[in-house]
Length: 119
Image (cartoon, rainbow, N blue to C red; front, side):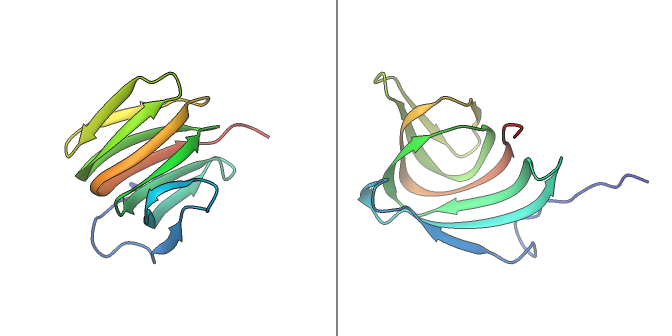
């Protein structure tokens, strides 16, 4: 029997703490907390809640990611120079091949669904 998987903002899985590597970090601290609620599809699909402190990093996506902001604000800038400002209530998809920067302007808390490529 298949069951529903709840992704709650409180009382979820143990947090995983992280930070940007020195070669990715451009500004600020960019400390992250990930609550991965579910992993499936042969360890290719991840769903949960992610938080980040202000900061700016270089990004190079090889995976698909759907995001829905619960809190905060960020600016995503493509290497071509085009930018998107996203904030609480916004949802968006980052496709594989997106290169540029992610700048967390106000602390972010978001739902995420990530699908990595097949090996």
